[in-house]
Length: 226
Length: 245
Image 1 (tube, rainbow over the protein chains, first blue to last red):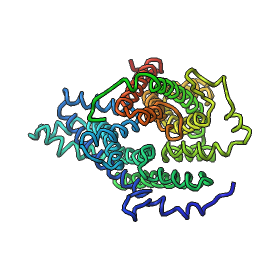
Image 2: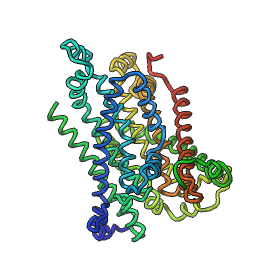
Image 3: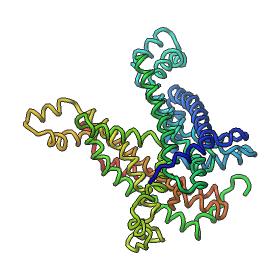
Image 4: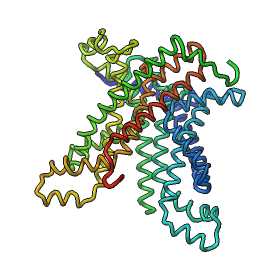
């Protein structure tokens, strides 16, 4: 088998940004944007849910845990299907598919963020909360000013791991035909027919560099602050 | 279709019901074969990974990093579109022949390129994850266990097999069960290479009679049910952590 790098070079701009110049985001660019958008939403949402579960230990926590275990019990692709069909029905209008996928990824990952954050809060020394209470702070203030800042700092590696997972999960948009990296690669493969090895190995390398690079950067950062 | 009204007749009867049943059987089969293959592959990967520094360990680290840092879907596309085409012609002809022995009820055939690529892809991908979970379980075994065994005159192989691995398995069982459940759920990605499992059939029903919501609900319940059954069975019959009740 001879390697044909020409097919990569000829389609490089399409793989990297799809039809972005024509006004439709695509390719690696869309992959990164989707991962960042869903990552930010999942982080904000997941931390808020964790705070709610920490402050209200009764029914709120039970409902949140039940929600998280249902989310963990079904494949991500089904969360995407549900968003894809329920959002337009609920909002009564067209929702771009890429937006549905971003919301589904965020919804799915928020459950993991919530559990990680709760674990991070529980891992702190009990004395931290007790000292806050002894100093006259309310439970909410203890959480906001003492526990959360420490927990979040400890949780950075775990959040980076979740974000790496999100980058990989954006590839599922292929199944609902959103033109991110995997979809455009498969389009190029269908068009050229003869070079699946070159195309799929190239995009695998792109994903690998993104994911590994991010993990390495996080390790470097952790080493510096520790 | 208007609003969110459910009409189950379009899913729980006739052809759609048949599709869901064969899809479920396919999901169960690909999960079982994929999990078996992943477990089989995880053993040498773990062995090389915890072995002495050198080419063996580097290979294991490269394998683990490579497969954990690329999307499973891209790996499945690679195995199906690239690796399958590199198999010797005779093998491919043999796979494409009719295999009565590999056919299950309802026309579910296990000797197809899609099924083999999905099994192989899931097996290789999850071998990397299982090996890392086992290694974490091994690292959590107290050092004294190894020293005590050494002082009893046991060899390093006997220590690994009789002392360390059983405890590592107990330590790592919970996360390992999580990985097996992940494998079952991620088998849904095989729809991307055309394996007719549950997700594929749900989409087929959707395009056949537009009963999208009912089909999604049925698929969701099938996966959720399989998750619950698999998890309780694996936790029930699996090894327990030492000292835990």
